[in-house]
Image 1 (cartoon, rainbow, N blue to C red):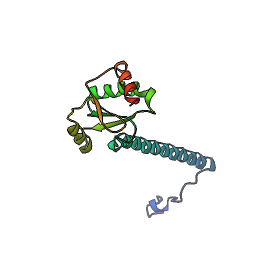
Image 2 (image 1 turned 60 degrees about the vertical axis):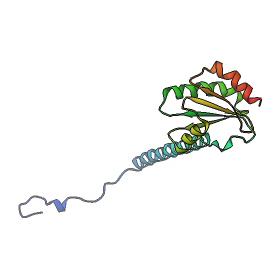
Image 3 (image 1 turned 60 degrees about the horizontal axis):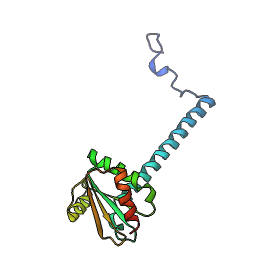
Length: 155
């Protein structure tokens, strides 16, 4: 107590509050769930980045499997539409044709586009030996692309 008769601040109970076992268990469960969710998100992000890296790997052209390379700008809506249509048309041939992306926002993608002499919103088709067999510029429908991809798969 201080000289004024009031309890001093230092005389208050400073012992840590005890938590009940049930409260500690709930807290442990919350932390465990949070860690599992974070781990799942981390794993999903890792696999997505691996898939994106695989999609950008243009070194596979000429490896014995026909390849379609989309030259695109990721911010371009027409490029995004072409990609959706292409992937839809490519589904039946997924095992027979490789899909790759040359993003002109990257040094490698821009260099590829310049070597091929094409702009974005373009598909460049290569046969299994890596010879360029066709260039498709602009947005094409899945119905238009399907027979073209079928022909490529047979090369």
